[in-house]
Figure 1 (cartoon, protein in one colour):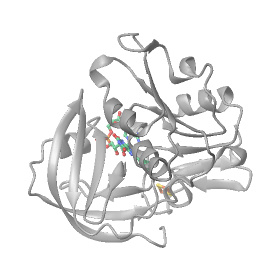
Figure 2 (cartoon, rainbow, N blue to C red):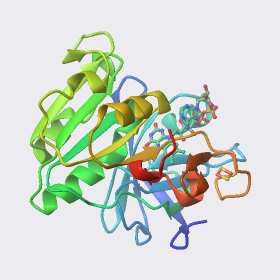
Figure 3 (cartoon, rainbow, N blue to C red):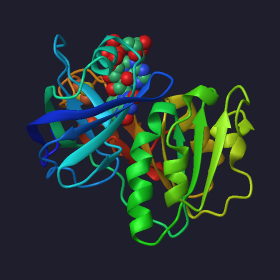
Figure 4 (cartoon, helix red, strand yellow):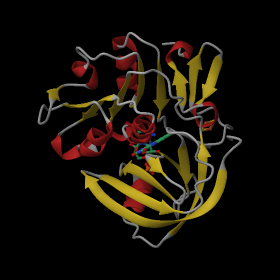
Length: 245
Ligand SMILES: Cc1cc2nc3c(=O)[nH]c(=O)nc-3n(C[C@H](O)[C@H](O)[C@H](O)COP(=O)(O)OP(=O)(O)OC[C@H]3O[C@@H](n4cnc5c(N)ncnc54)[C@H](O)[C@@H]3O)c2cc1C
Ligand code: FES
């Protein structure tokens, strides 16, 4: 388990539908273990033995914001929870993104977009405005486009059905972007397409399905030049140069 993790109780203060099946949850509690954008938390949901990992989209001294898609029984139960409920949450998990590059390109797909928000915010605080490419299935799934616009140099949207922005996938909207480093998070087929379509170094964040969540089952491992790395304990962020793809 990550050395800096903490197990704490958090009160849900907001749980709002922001796009199709997509919710923004705000929790109040001790956020001192959150140290980098791209880290995740492991949430205990009543009635489920395994915790559910969700990336931290944003945090400050007292609150953290998670953006999640209701895709199965655990996240659907979370979506039905009303503010006031107290949750047991392991925080400060994972390595998170390391800020590099003066002209960053941020590429997110669907439920992989949330951790890039905290990263865009960190860059903006340093006076660096990123170019952001966000991929969705359709218009009704789009979230946080305006929030990213406030922090970024440019936001490009792609939808698989062409209802908004470029029709297709994130890699269809890369033309003429001037970048010197990239950051990405999304489903693995998208990550592989980004790997092939980018010509600089970058960092990949994996949202693989996890088992134990603490390094014991190898269920989340990924091949790298230094051997198999577990996404739960040695990720979720892995540099492009380390990946064997
Ligand atoms: C490090 C990390 C960060 C994550 N961050 C986010 C986030 O910020 N926002 C978000 O919406 N989701 C995120 N996820 C995915 C999230 O953990 C799963 O969607 C969640 O655990 C599903 O739980 P469930 O009980 O609802 O689904 P289950 O009942 O366990 O599964 C139901 C369905 O969901 C699918 N599913 C389960 N886990 C995943 C997964 N990891 N990726 C894709 N499909 C899955 C299953 O294949 C199945 O079809 C993250 C995952 C990891 C590992
Ligand atoms: S989920 Fe078990 S080792 Fe990562």
